[in-house]
Image (tube, rainbow, N blue to C red; front, top):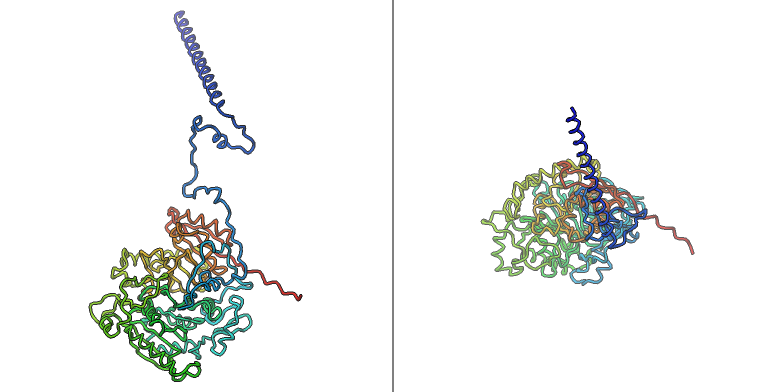
Length: 629
């Protein structure tokens, strides 16, 4: 028993000594590290934090060789990086002056005066330099109203939207447009169709078949207020109408206000912005284009954009000069000689004049060039083009050479492939794809893309009730159309879509496919303004446009151009990477757009998101009343 107590005392003693040793060693180590710390901080002044100091600020003031810290990153990586102080400014885009209400940057009248008047070069596209770009938002005129819905808009427009009466006076006898109270009325008249555009189209239908679906796409050169194109829409024929800005004030603007496809354009020294073999029919009704001048170069350009077997329709001078020469204030001999020269140019292009009846003459382009090549022994000019890509048409100079059609093996074969009749051609595999001429795009790709856009548009309509509302929109723009799937998915709605193919996508030029589907479109560089008036479109669709142009031009400049061509209360859908959309959202928040970002149709795990936005209604202020001095 005594031995046990003795051992217990020894154990307690050893345990006590061990604790004392540990405490002593710990105290010595703390003292050593404390002294080392004082010595290190004596190398520089120790900052004294104030009320605005942060821990990170304190640590950053210590020498890099004395403090080694690791900062943990708790930020989600799908957000954009913190901007540098220089880029954290909030953008500010005030309204432009009311004088810019109808501003078309690339067709500015003042800039055009710097250029040659020969061949109307001064009326072509001449865009401002980067340092000339406006950083303000184009105002709608005071009193602007949402346009009438189609088809009512074909006959009516609000005067406040296009406040110009010049045409109502100048073309009064020709029934183009009238003013009644707050409205414009478009009776459908034209210089060469006093009975109205519908009756004029009936006359054409008696000469060539407009009902069987073989003619779907048309182009109207020098379109006036585009009544010809307006009345073709009800016949399932869609026309691209164009005229320069502006021989007659606001003619293209009237066309767009009516809900008719149109662009500002002119036949001058560069190609029209369309691919070869695009249109089934081309039309000129007293369009004032000198077809017989410059060795027929303008008819050569029409030939390029006409599909094999397509028609060219001419009414007005010099057709039927025998009955009209006195009213046209020209001599009979002059008009007769002009018609003779036009006939000669048409023959040199291997066109066949199929009919001339009354005021209308119609020529037809051959379906292939087998016979045409043989006739070069007779018509040595124009020669066949050797080098230029026939689909290259963005600032591409006109040439006095004939665009060769694709090779065929026999005389009955249609160059480039047979197109199905409308509406079957919309979803049939286009010949440019089935022939393999569009590198990397197969028939399966086309079918899959068509189905994909049906699903996407159905998803859009679930999110955007205005897009789903029949008649809410009429004029639509697809800024990156690819194969035209977006437009094809909307074909049963009362809308038309301008399918833009960016010229930066020239390695895969798909605009020809879009026309083969029976849709319309144009080439466009989105670092420049579009050749159209402000408030052209009710709705804009932009698929990965901002990613495409991220290294070419500023996001804000593209958004300002979208704002220029979009109507008040117009809708926008932008698809892109989430980082891109977050940047866009910050900009549109100061542009009087209301927007929200939604998930991809496949769900929230996709990086690509969709921005839905609406441009708010706002206009220029009313003009101050003039007081007598």
